[in-house]
Image (cartoon, rainbow, N blue to C red):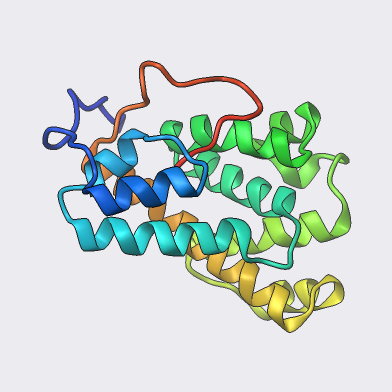
Length: 186
């Protein structure tokens, strides 16, 4: 069965409330359609911003590692919007073109370090809904308990993002910048 492309957003996009718009500007982010969709529920938008930015800026694990995990999720879940937003961030964080190209078949690629492979293994396990002992053992070889929690929460949050994007039918911004300095939503 093939997914049909949505006709447009589930409902009209709107500008976030003034405090959220100010927060977005303070974070150095740009206004994106995900925020415009979430703006219909101001408390949800506020919570989203707080949680997403704590994952983005408040972790001990390398940003590039978390961006590779996010892109793996986008690839598996066919989340075009998520890929579009996070490809720029992954490049800015240090991901190579080879790593980005290999995401769909990371298991057979030699361009990932052992810790990156462990994190991608976790991502896949979380997307299937079963993180077994082998995954935990592999993660423990490379990451502290705090780092493992960060990776689990990152994988969990970004497994949710494509479902929200799909349900809200969030379109890619027509004026989306494609520069290494672009900042995105989730």
